[in-house]
Length: 502
Image (tube, rainbow, N blue to C red; front, side, top):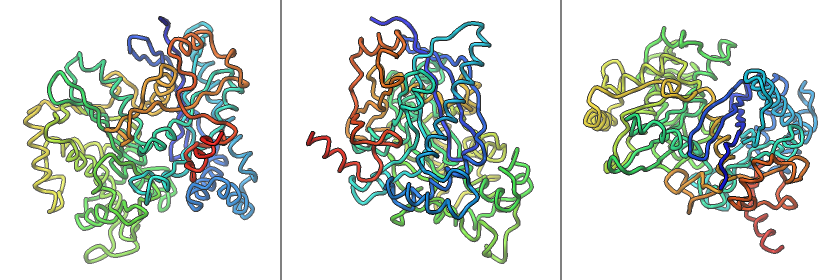
């Protein structure tokens, strides 16, 4: 049996394209998880702008990557962007990630005073488009697109890379999201002994997502998870377009405004509408969302009247920030009554750095419906949710940043992929029917060794792969799937049929 720990680096670049978060984490065979070091590497503005153009092309081409690459190259001609080839852009993005990984290793070794043996990199890649089965007309019309060259990253760093985590779940009938719940379950294992159970991990970025670790009784464990809906997306876009600033720093603008009930109603009814016209917020889990569905309504942008006139910028920002908290609280309705409702809420992600949204969420959880207006059709529901919370915990609901629970919130998503890489090596499923809607528990990701040579993997990793016989657990046909983007891009079922013929 293997007895040594695995050192895994997780990498995540989010929708904001502001930085690569990288974290080095030690995973022990007994399940303990300890972060050793982490950093954020700012993304060059030129690279971010090129990625935005590619992302728009992928969306416009409905996940058809060959068409999207050509579309990008046609459009970039009319810009001042310098990366004209889509292939070069994917290469440049991957090399940027490689530099961030090397910087982290250098920093970690300087911090520890010794040479470190890194076993794995869990590389998510940059999401460009996402159409899960809940939105697609049928399973074969679903797709998910993340770009990033795992083989190039392995070659550049000399470390084995696990990447393309979402494809396996989608090809097994799942939503390919959220992937956080199983990682959060692993963290919750450590917290349960401290009495922090049941617990919800609330991750807030452009999109909010929630993982609920609960059970029917004190001795059982059930894991649920779903994308809640928009979080930073609306206030960030408003501030960027109208104030030429990255975000509402410390909620300074929102704090000067008031929540407008009419705009709140519009946002709930029309703000997050899928391609087939469905209100995403009303869909039951399992479900996953995409920022392309978040509509900048004219009333939100100050271009159409709300009630008797246009709203002030401050009121629009405040309502958008309240809406982020509102949909989080609303989504607790999806926890079945036979399961225990969380008594602990671990907040993670940059969205909670905004005290306006965070305070509203905390107040809602504590039943303050005076300073936090509730839409008429939700009043009974909100009271029922509060009564469940009060019945479970009384006034002792614990709401804190995940750092206070012992795990960095800033690097939560990056660590998630370090964990997913370890689970790929140990052959453990990272998505389940209750978290993503997949048909059966699913192992995620494909493996790339430095220069394609398994013998260049660390000796420690080689022992793990031998012990768990896990090297070939997922569908990996490099001659059919282009390794620069996810296997489950559009028409993935056709490529699977090609595999079957081989």
